[in-house]
Image 1 (cartoon, each protein chain N blue to C red):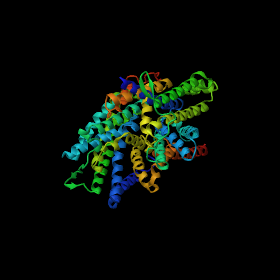
Image 2: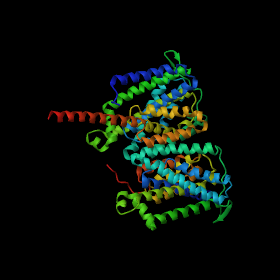
Image 3: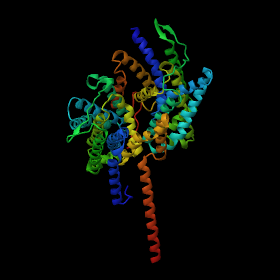
Image 4: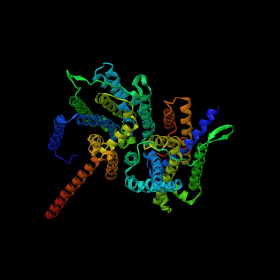
Length: 291
Length: 332
């Protein structure tokens, strides 16, 4: 049974990273109806920004700080002001298409300006194994889990316990009323974009040591986060967290017990089943229909 | 498009058709391949335009239907069947699968529908890749023959380009007829206001499934032409990015405009080729161009033209009104 235990821990670790990305995804959807098809590329890019800083001679910790800041400027501020703001009022679809184009652009830019090859990336957690309940568990998995859980706890505290968080939720749920009672809705939307940028940069920092930095690695990640967000509930932060963990575990179990060829199919079939029988997601609330 | 005079429109159309027939005659092999690819992608995009632009059902699975059509044609023609038979099978198969895929559309709408079709698209890719007994797996199917029509072989690039162009013409006429038929009007009613459409006695259930099935069938046609065009297929071209590309073509050209897919496919297939002189930068420039276009006009290229013509009509109408008003005042 040690196999199952290892699979579960590894699955939870990847799942926690998916959850970070999925939470960002649902935040953007809630506040600005942005379906970000470039979310996977958003996770891929910060690792390269950090690598670039290290190539320029910065120590690892400084590279992380610079990478995070640059990500928040590029993927938060610039993304919102240059692409989302001009297109928001035109409905969901044109903006979604524009983010698809953005995904191609980011991928090609990394390929052209950095490298088409996979680059190794240093880990913030020391490698090695520790023993838990008689099982050898990699420190990396534990480290990823701890960092991701802390980030998620921090975010939920921010959203549920602080005035700022309440304002953000109000701006997301009913912008008109929020504006009337004096919530600076525009600033709150910008804040969610910055939080999303922070979350993807954090996810990048956690996942790149495991899967290497490669221009095309965003495709798989983006789709996993996407599925996690929908399975958990597109309009709930806690749904996205549960969805991320679930998809991570499911993916790892499917690889071991179903077939390596069809491992990717298991989360997809699960996704279709969830949409058909519980479209609001496992933990989501039903969206009111406009018609 | 009613801003132009009708004779002018017909003349312009004939000119474009004549150009498409005559100009490529001295193109090289690669130029003809790109142009044939444009014709094939236009057919697929027209199908998606029916589903999305006219009936308002978001689909991220058109690439999967191109794949289904391509594999059907590849498997049949390498086993000695003629291409028209393979196209027919591709149509029937894509229509049936599209019909089934339409069922989720009865339950969920908009972005949820996009996600279901996205999942389907990836599942189809997995089947193409893993069922090697049928599809050849990652090694794909090679030596796909090109057909003979009326005893003329189409092995050379130019004759096969005419096969693609001819198919595009047939599909264009069929779609032109369809959107002007009661069906087309039912599709548009479905897009504009499904509830009202239903209250007017339109069987929205049937038409939603129809919109999916017909759009998918055109994807199958495109695939069945794609296989003999490249003469070799493997699963890679039919992954999710093809579906996203096709969606981009429809939106960039102008969803819900008849000529939208022609322009959209032109930009997606030809623009990267024209930008090739920039070497590694061409896809980046393409992505930036698409984003700028969508920021400027979210309804695509034809949306710009449409707005311009509407503005001109309003201007002309207000000028007429001003003249009429001054006449009235002079008469009083």
